[in-house]
Image (cartoon, rainbow, N blue to C red; front, side):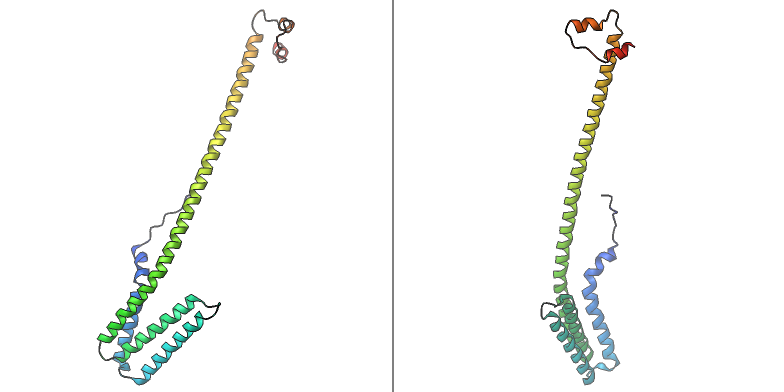
Length: 201
């Protein structure tokens, strides 16, 4: 009920949304640096990046086969395969138009995949917040009912104590009246008060 309210910094809110673009941009920048340092039209480097990309794709396929398949490992492997392919093409090509085109496509695909996970995460978070809110309302209602019940019991006890005090005061007052005769009341058939003798003492 007394939960601490934490205001997240705006960078913490933007960082997950910018992660796909930052990842693809980093791969493009590193590939262009690699291109400037001798990877342009290098068959050996192209073969290496192709082999690594195919190996990562094969690992992703293996991670999806069978009941023991893990979607997180498969997604990571396929993302690595795409990143290696982008790096290979951007490092091998001599112009910037093809690497930029591949960067735009890779970024669009990355955001397309990320949006799906963001939507699932948002649904899970909303369901959890709704569940917590329902539980909080239920507990608040139970606390209210218990408070009302406790207050009622206290008031009933106070009323009973006040009635007993008034009754005792009435008995004392009646016993102190001049001419009060307890025996005459008993003879007349009226109910006697056993505590009257104690008050007379």
